[in-house]
Image (cartoon, rainbow, N blue to C red; front, side, top):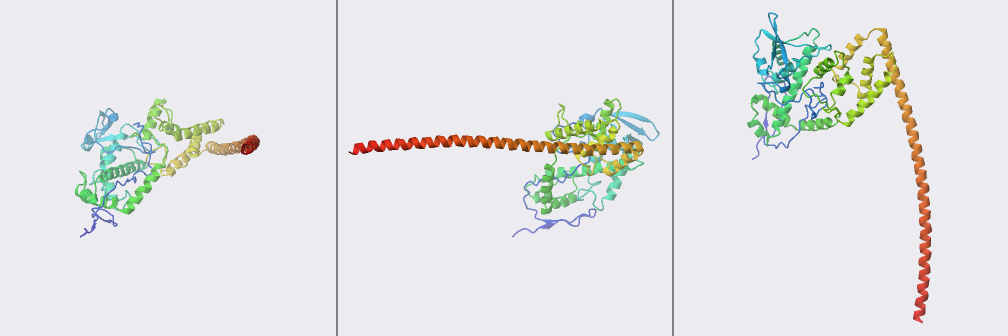
Length: 437
């Protein structure tokens, strides 16, 4: 007698009302869940084997006892409630969880309100760590924005505020923190999915859940993964992920922190988005990550050089226009800026800073130059097209003449061969007649 399907009931905390009915004995067959490979928030220590474009971090598990080797000797500023400050090296996530309530780690932000000092990596790691704990961020929710998740988010941000000190009068830092948590939570679920795929059947997955995972949450998550709808979604996401071309090489280092390092190395001079984007897509030997990226940068540099020939245009505005023209419009996040700022917020801020008539005039001048440049390119392409068509026609005509000449020679040779064969046949006929007589 066949075993009946078992229905998984959602927990009280989860909003999932559509828990799937599924067969515990179904074989898994290695479904590849690429739900985590959505368009990601920012450029994320250099790693020449990063697979995903614009990913901020690629770690699978955070070691509770120590941090990444690249950050072990970083000096972190800690401020006590009495106002005293001190520096400390080699702080771990475990140290952070046991940090006295009188102490807070100081976070500094750039002009876009994005953390960029040495302590920012610790804040980012803490965000990834806290969402791996089911009591704070249950994996039974299907999406980060699911109804009912709000209370858990409020509790997590309270814990972050206890550990870190930052100025967030505009509210952008908290937005950055939630995006970090969101990314860390989805990555955590993606890593659990990889473990899920190693089970032979759904029943095996339910009977032997991973360590430190709340069983009830695990059962709801397995129910979702085992559904046909989810499998189809995973396949679609997998195909979309293949379309990504420009893979950055920053690894876990945020673009905000990379920008600060480049500016320090440049004597404090600001670094534009295009320069940062180029550096973030190079290997250690200085070469580009692939040919597609190389072609984009060649195009961008040529266009920038052309526009900058006009001494009246603003260099910053030129870079923004070139970035948009060559790499396309921003979607969901601003490349080279980082998590926390949407394209609307970022460009509104830039617009507010460019309110005087000279800057508006410069912007209009750039747009005019861009259009003029596009017309010139179009004319060059059209002339090139005509020249190519003319050359092809000439080649075809010459080829036609050569073919006709060769055919005429072959025809003449053929006629001579036929005539010779006929003469030989006649001679043979005469010889045969003489023999018969």
